[in-house]
Length: 302
Image 1 (cartoon, rainbow, N blue to C red):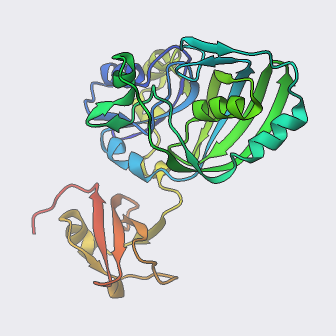
Image 2 (tube, helix red, strand yellow):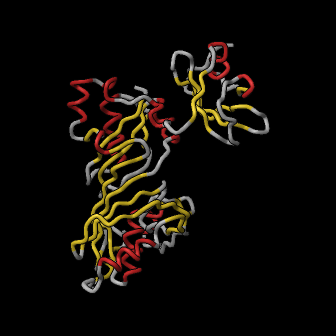
Image 3 (cartoon, helix red, strand yellow):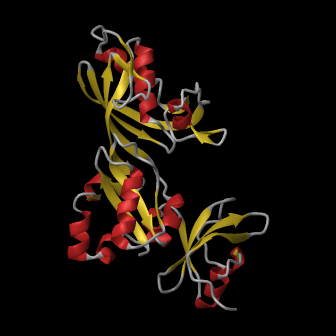
């Protein structure tokens, strides 16, 4: 049970429910996800099982969302599940106004997360504080939004596609867009269609998962744990160094065949000659060595 599962989470189900289901169906306790999807949201939910759970931090690449935003209605959670806090006629808003406003959110920007979010403040989740009636003002955080494209404008509903880096709240984009346009807005629906190398077209739906396991078994369903690491350079080591890697000992770069000199702090995948992923290492320029960041090989006796 070591691998990655590309799951299509339906709307109305929490990410924690998806993890609990995989644990129950597999019997594997080491299960985690690569990023929470709100219950309202659907789409790509990457889950790691066994050693795959330890590989999730190395998923690289952007995320792509398709969002439906309703103008004219503001909520306290910035989405359709929240309490309505204001309404205003959006009939004066035209598509050109929307395109101009959306451009302001592209690039490296400071984004204020929703009060109802899982970010911690003083040791407690913001949504816990908000539900308890404690005034919450989350500090802005830097995020990267590569592009926002209008897919459909059917007033008062706007459909957009967003490509962004990790940590971006699409709910905040919806809310901030409404504030910029002067009419308010909230996120009506959200679907994640891509997370790094994983796309919705190849995801397994939560509903079909039990039957698919029964027909094919976990071996044919789970992707290898290095499926999450495609952007990292790989290094193959001779058998004599397998114990070195397995025991968490650094590898001097002079012993390795690297086409290009490593950059400081660059991550590398380390494989055996048999194609087995042994570890992810990080280059230390001071020591001229690849130091283990996470070891996947079983510790060996020296």
